[in-house]
Length: 93
Image (cartoon, rainbow, N blue to C red; front, side, top):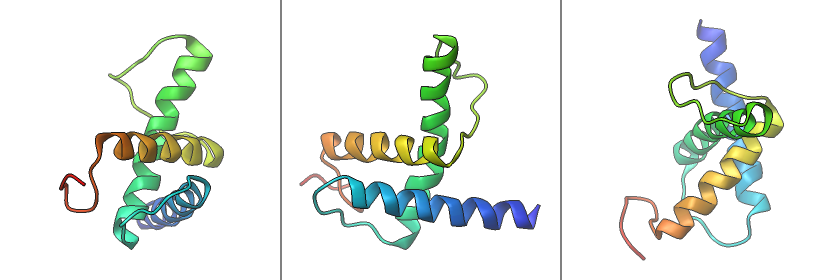
């Protein structure tokens, strides 16, 4: 179980960092926020995968997706955060 959590944190960090590098602009995120972006992005990627593969949005059974799906989900999440206009700390710009 501990190995799974460590791998999840490492994959979250890598996926979040790649998403932040691919989306132009400045983000005021620290290391923990980047890890959270990657982990939550993996679940967002799982929802997108369900929409593409099964043509339905199944919110009752969330699942993670692969590495590329994690990056895609993190990019989507990062763009949504920018549209919401929030930065680190939840304040409006």
